[in-house]
Length: 295
Image (cartoon, rainbow, N blue to C red; front, top):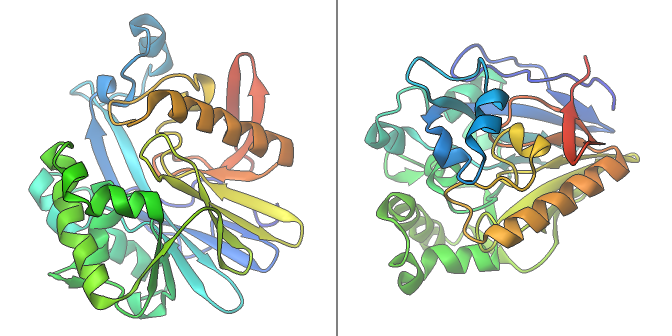
């Protein structure tokens, strides 16, 4: 990959205006929404305690929690600018009591872009930390952009019967944000793999949620894949069968993760994920994988 850099953004800190990576004539920028602490049993609900403790050595804060970054992705092409996911948003960050999150707009400005520059927003899935930033002050953050989401995911987060079966903490943001998109007629609900703009595809990757999707970017024989929440932490590369408390379909989560990582290793794709700081390539390692970064 040309002009390959690892982890250009700093969660809640200085924004690097340079692209995190370039692929052909496309550029990718990490747009940090900040970071949020999580309990280890939330991120790793089925991990053996001893193995988990060893894997997390030196990574936990003073409260024994794991700080996970929130990384949206801005992809610029010769003709359009595309944002994948929009962060938690300031309103939800305030409601959650996490002041180090909700900073997507600040980070976007730090890279030299404004909401008016965004032509397309891709929604990987409907969890609040991915869609809350689509609304700012009760209005759409990107009113001039198309918003693309997979049909099963849209149905999951707009059907009241399904929402009623989920915890309020997961559904409150969807109940606010998604109706506003529909009312403004700016949402494209697509089914199956879809080329959102030339060279950029939304690819179904169900498991974490019903219609969870990843995004691939390809140009001039090079490819990157944004895994969204197909992995939630770098330890999910090493231990691909470890699950989180919010993986809706556990068996499918594992199968999808292994399929994606196998494909990324085979294709030498550049790999990044919403909650993983590093950017790099994947290779098979023991019974799992490893993500290795390059300067």
